[in-house]
Length: 353
Image (cartoon, rainbow, N blue to C red; front, side):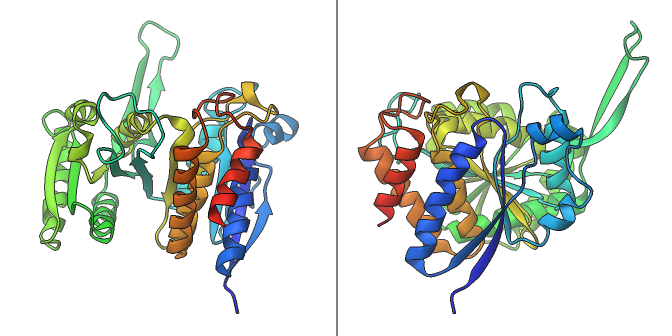
């Protein structure tokens, strides 16, 4: 009997539903080819629902999502909703309440994709950033005094626990070992200034490293990381870092791999329900035009299959995408691909077969 996976789908806002439709198309084709089943349940969480009901997420949303094997997300962000409402109310809430404590971001330059770095190609840009996803400065600790006055005070605290730091670092060592590429793990931090938080990170990193003698370790300040991403991206294999630094360096990583149109990521709970999404935003100005690039969403679907244990199917989707970037599309930019959104999805399906 074939295995069945129950997938919660949140198409979201703007062009989210368009790219998710192509991702689902590819996932269905791969599941049929490889002999497992995907059952999709759709949820309308996003800007349109909020504007109609005033409700960001219904009370039972998290409980309902926990019944699924994974979540497939399009994009969150609506031009008529104040920034922060949907992001905090949906994205951050799901990450925290589902304890998706790892943000997994492969940074890989595919063949045929133009890289903004001089003389760098696919052999030079192939690394993974593992970002702690539920603590740090995004935990929401802090407050404001005397708002709107000349004496206003705003405090935003970074929360780092031994448990949170250690489980992220252990995941990174295990991932590096399984990846088995350069077997090198780099800690990205700021030990010379953020002495309390990154003393904890650094001590934990080297304590855990003793259990992984086959993994080479390195440390780099976050500002140096940003320079070396541009100058020598080939130096990196796997990078582990905190929530805020991870947020910043993964956007730089997306640019050197060709842009947000190809960047996919996962919010991982290794013991629970994980969520996979394209990194780019909802791009509302392109909504309904059938010109948005769906490849990042399709790649996110591949990551989801790998996380579910369908490793070969995940790799097959990535290989099909790489064939499309090498042989078909002219650009990752919306309206400049040489194909429509749906045609790009069809090309990936054709390459799967």
